Length: 220
Image 1 (cartoon, rainbow, N blue to C red):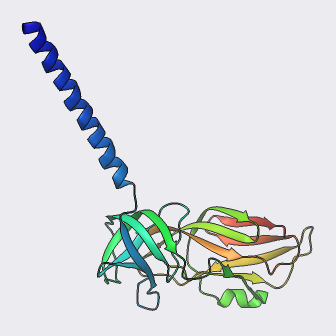
Image 2: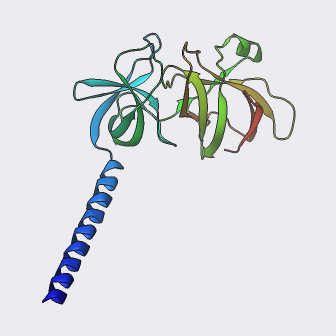
C-alpha cells in the first residue's frame, strides 16, 4: 500500500514538473513572436522625430530595431517591443526597442538612389558623426549598418557620390553619407539601403566614416 502511494505521488510530481516545463517553453516562444500590428509613419519633419509605428491608437517612437531590419513609411507591420530608457525631444509617444519586426504589406520602395554631385558640393551637405558597423552589397543594393547619437531612428540619409573619378584601376569616387544631426544622445543603430545601379562600371566608393575611409568595391 505504501509502495503504491509513493509511486503514485512520484508520477504526479513528474507530470506536474513536465507541465510547468511545457508551459514555460510556450510562454518563451510566444514572447519571440510579433504580437502587435501597426503602420509605419515618417515624422522626420517634426523636431527631433524620426519614424514611428502607430498601433491601436498609440504612437511608438522607435529607438532600436533588430539587426538587419529597416522601417519604411507606409509599411503595414507586425511587431513586438520592450520599452526603451532614453531621452527624446519628439515626445509623440513611448520610446521602444523593437524586438520582432515583419512586413505585412510594403508601402514604399526599399532603396534610395545615390546622388551624384560635383566634388566641391560634397562639403555643403549636412554631416553627422556615425560609425559604420558593417556593409554588404547584394547585386545593385548597398546595405549599410550604422550607429549614431540622436533622438530617434531616421531614414532621411542620402549617399552623395562625387562625379569626379580618381584615376586608378578600378576608378575611385569619394562619397559621403549625409544626414542632419539630432540634439539628443541616445545611441541608435539602424540599416540604410542605396541603389547603385546608376554606376555603369566597376568602381570603388571611398566612404568617409568616423573610423576613416571605407573602400567599397562595386561591380555591376
